[in-house]
Amino acid sequence: MIHQYDEGVYLYIYSSLADNFCVGDEWYKSVEDAKRVCKDKYEIGAEEWQVIDDPIEGCQGDWLNPVRIKGRDFGNPEWGKFERFENGSWKDFNQANATFRKTRVKT
Image (cartoon, rainbow, N blue to C red):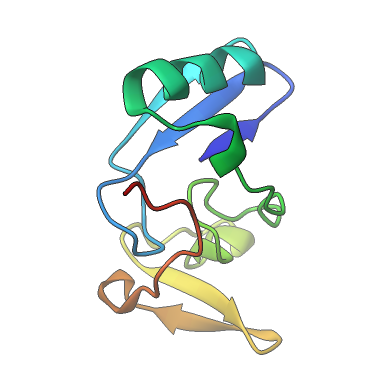
């Protein structure tokens, strides 16, 4: 997953298809630089990219679905505890129950 910020671009690296935290990230100056690395290093072609929505403010940038640290919105984060936005409200979330991402699968 590539996520563009004002200062540059994060390339998030995953080890599974589950919508979960990334296992690593890399920083690039531009989307073009990140895509070039993806093509050369990870064999991801231009035709395989899909546009997804930016994360909701305060949510984890490396998840597809809205997930945040529990209590962070009140200035009292409970590190290691998460909430996920489902059906119009925030619900406690155990990352072990993550759903599968709808993204590129290398064959």
